[in-house]
Image (cartoon, rainbow, N blue to C red; front, side, top):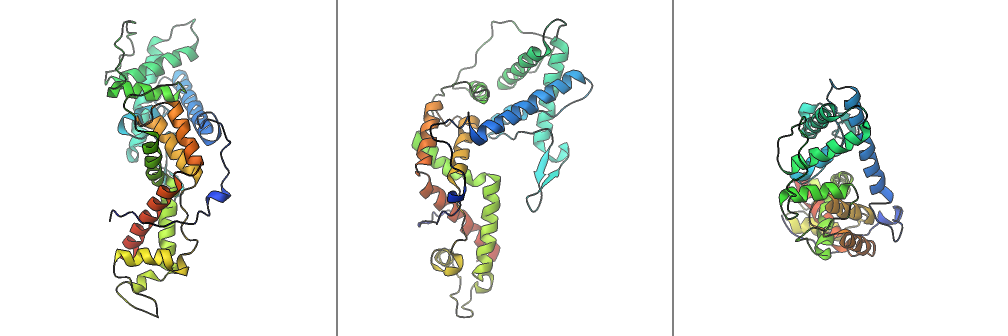
Length: 317
């Protein structure tokens, strides 16, 4: 039911969330900075562990870089977790989690490179840096890693518009390097797509499910399907559900649409994990315009649309 639902949702969540500091860049402050620092620290710890324990394979934070090619990254901060039925973290095995398998393979490549290439007298930390960069370029070029071969300096630099070039560019952005990408979306397109992408954030997905079930219960929707019962109007079509969400007192205050911070988080993911955002200036412009409220209407409508679809699945209209 790919409809977009008109109407404004009361934004009760945004007022309770902390506002970002004006004039700061999301990659150097707040939630994004701490997240990247945690990933970087986890990566360094993992690589150092491989160096100390050459017989063991370690899951490291470089899974972020591996995930770029498949469209999304999932950093593993020292342990692999998955969401259980009620959203709680629970350990999973590598066989259950393709990200864990991917991370183990990359960790082995980095470890093999360091064991093979490190020379006594050189600083181990700098060998780490070399090998992580080598793994990035090997993955970008879909090239088999040869840990015992330090390639000549005359290498082919991947074109920025190619998949290999984009892979390297996003790795560089992950290292806070300014990279300009060809053929990006406009800033407005970035804002609109962030207002859609935000629905995929785990906490927003959880709220969609919770709000749909709250609506179904508080508005007695299951009992009203194909029925006019207890003086309440029956629910026969999608439009009936939409009308109930918009006009009935039982739905007041139930919907909790994405906050400004969450939409900014989705836009930051686009900057770091896609080629949609031209450069840092375009990213900062988009974040500022989101902060000024330009994403509220599409984000609210997308959220309500998704909740209504979930309600329909729950009550089986």
